[in-house]
Figure: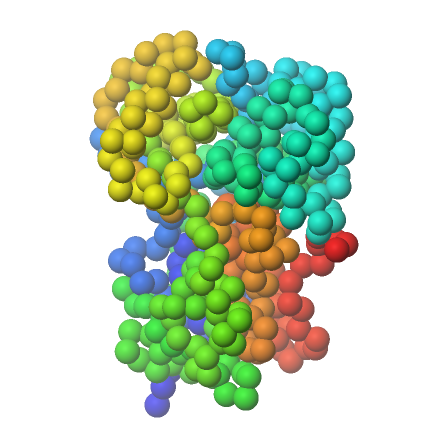
Length: 447
């Protein structure tokens, strides 16, 4: 007889682990967590190198202690703190403060003039309306006849927060919606105390404490079986498993390709999923034999397009004593993925940027250079929040998608964790037989 579980969660990245941990803490349902790789964590896994703890890319904790990741950790009774980090813009050879470790510090910002700051705040408040997400960054700047100060800020923030320098496609609504949340919560970003390793450990510990949750590594979800529009089970690792509900915690595109749904997804919906574009970036982690800065802020730059962070200043435990860890990110067009000459040139530009921004020459012990996927869906117009798939897959009762590519508030890891919180609520209602089953968030409003 096939094994039976109330919920199968496929994917053990930050979204899948968060959901499995939340379900384990409540203990109402039997859960099977599948991960195709040999270790959990996905893009949030951590490796150790020469005493440094290295992220798989660059991962700030957006909205800091007031964000979704912090909420998940509290639900799991974890004492891990999300330490605050400010934001600055490097422009014209100067490091200009923008948002500090609390919102009140905006009064000290030196990036925007008074008129530009007022326009920025008004646009953030207006991001509650759906139509704002269909306006590109370039289009918004042209429409509002913005000054050079506001143009440089929006472009820099698009690079660091939306993971793109294609301003003619990037959604201004996504950018302003994030800062609307910052205005409501009073904090922009942070980093976990001790790095991301303790976060993953805390989620795994919550899962392991439950006798009702099983984890299988090296096991890929192959098929979702549906009868009369209702999920009945899955095939994973060549084995048929009965399931009351299935949650796909991986990029939505995979549900249109590598994972089959029987009966198949409607062609229009499948095309919509498969057309979603993922973001790509150059990520560099550099260990320094001696610190070159005490700055704790995330630094945004337009030329070169980059995000820079002395991340060990936030969490000293991720670098050996007396040393420092820098992280760099620069968005890449997919055509540049295999362009070694371009990647080497951009790497040199980023290291030069660090010297200019911090006023010192990095004394490099090592550097790790990666071209990697940053997010499942880059926030372009046409695939911004209102256009992304809802958590509940329409027409298939008990089938859900979570992660950083769904229609939910937030960006990056915060979006992934928030979708897990919402999916827990939807699952509970569905498995209890409550009606109606919600399809997603109400926001943004309007049309």
